[in-house]
Length: 370
Image 1 (cartoon, rainbow, N blue to C red):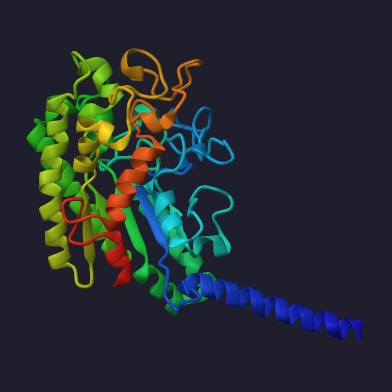
Image 2: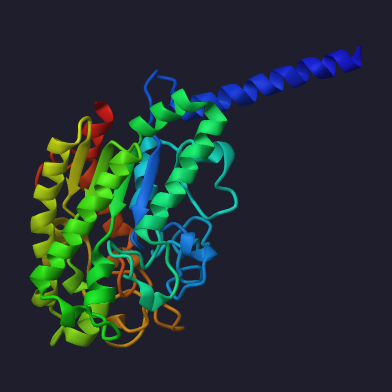
């Protein structure tokens, strides 16, 4: 009799597990709505720890990174707290997608999405080589293909196709192609291309990558433009005279962004069923820097919270002891390259609910309501 009861409980347990996986895969909520999976591609702005699992100089697995997280643990995020993918999932009410290289990124954990982003990655394959290791965009796509296969094994191909088709795909990439490639003294890139030629090279390559992504089943894209890289403390430490943003470098970003938006529009017109959303990070962050007091930033806007040297822009990994601002909510930049959690929250709010000047042709909330 006990054996029969055990068998009955085993059947109930198996059914419960299958139902839980199916509900997670299809995104069913109590209200009957579907919450899409989120898949993130890009660089250190959205890396949640993939670089912890490779040999690289670009890593954020040490303190003071994560100092404002509830658990104070440095997870590999290049921030004092949450980055934009975290905030999006907070809004969705779904678990944070794991870094694809984490051992836990398997089974049912894949069904709410995966993060493939890697610090140092760029549009070009050789971008980030100065850090030695990074997961390039082509490698990120390779991992995504493996994720698709795993999801199909878990829930079957029809349900997997639906999950992939309805998911949201975020791309944040391009800054490294300038800061850690074109502008790097260890590369010859700037001697091979004028800024305009290099911009065209990036746009053409990114165009091909997004078409490849579409071919892999991706349909709903949120693509961030390049932020004001000429205002980053790392750039200021070598190029700024008095702490002002370096317009020449910001012009690199502006030129790229001016070509990116129409490129996304042309892709949407060309690729049936696709949606390409352009997130205007440049103007949002530039607006914060132009009027910091409006947002409660009282520290010098172009000085990083942690680091060393002028503007704290030399120690890009914040390993220098004793250089840490006491209140991160007063600073725009966390380290030599990356914004604080507070800036991420401002950007995320604009991406979720902002108007066409912040994100177009619709915001994320409108995309989710479709």
